[in-house]
Image (cartoon, rainbow, N blue to C red; front, side, top):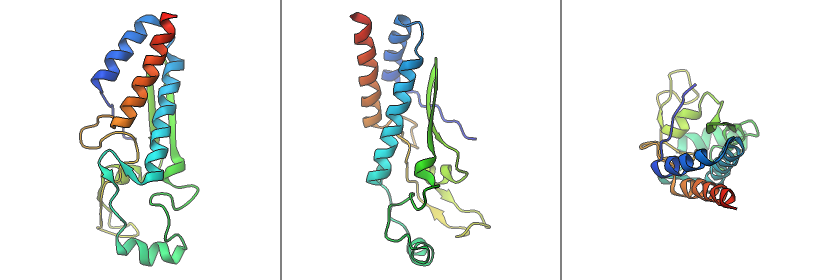
Length: 162
């Protein structure tokens, strides 16, 4: 399993203020995890991420593989009901909110890389198609994800004041 910690300064500062005001931040973290999952769903739907539109599929992927399987045309990374998009899951606790995928090929699609010699397309370079709401180069939350998380934190901070 690969663990990536996103350290967004403005989110962490706001979260620290909230922690000082709440005895249990689990509900806040649940809201944040759900917001991250919603942003991931949006990225799948728009086939884009923090780096912009995802690169198109290669001819090698579309013609022999997807056409033969009857999945072309179709949305990238969403070929099957058991594929990458539905594998995105959330977890949360008193001091964390996370989003992840349990698919062994998930990191390849998030960060890009070269396929193994035993894959369906051996030695092929796969471009990054970030489907989680953070920049794979800087590990910062996408602007939309950051805005969503800050809105959630502001709502909870506002509730403390009432």
